[in-house]
Image (cartoon, rainbow, N blue to C red; front, side):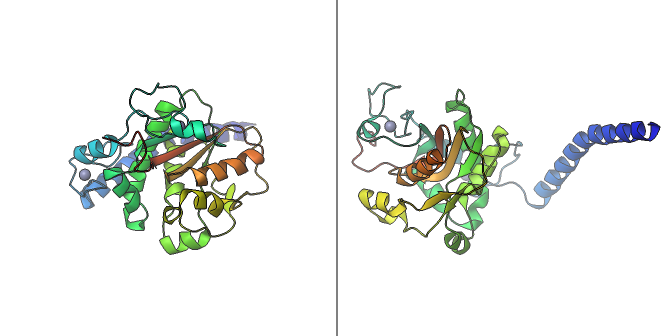
Length: 275
Ligand SMILES: [Zn+2]
Ligand SMILES: [Zn+2]
């Protein structure tokens, strides 16, 4: 009995000591890292004087440029709303088409600096930028989906051959950052890409729907019944990929599916895409 009490006391002491110890180790590692590799903007490379923990590693100018495009957006599909369009109403795109996801949020519109940032994120050397964009996306999710319950965070899957050739998987890194910030569980393997699809950006809208149809499957062994899922990707243009992924999740029993993307693409003929 006494041995048990000593053991419990020791375990409790270790647990109590671990938190400040971990903080000290983390801060020391961070200080050492900043001494050896001074912090620099993940987008333009400008040296930064100090980098607060948990904030995007971006200089003020880049941060303003990347967030500037995040204007009034449709709460259902994240498309920018035309001028004078009511805040809570479905946008013209949503009125024409219904999605299998309930709502979508984006840091901003896929153009200008944000478009360049998303393109850069497709290269492994730009993973620090992806990490910073993940922090911005986590802020967006916290601000716009605060009233929604999110049980699981799932990245839009990428075929293993494309992952191998790219050497980076932005959707997964974004999902990991959001999961860490919002303290929500990740399910990195629940959705699988069954076949290699052609790059959506090279196809016309109706071809994109066909291209991803049946491309995803839900892995066996995951209990997602009634779970609300946050689906994460770097960019959404027509919504065909996110819609197909959401369709598979709903078919497997998921509750609501929400979509979080860094950039929401719109066509040049989109009524809300003017300056
Ligand atoms: Zn910068
Ligand atoms: Zn909409």
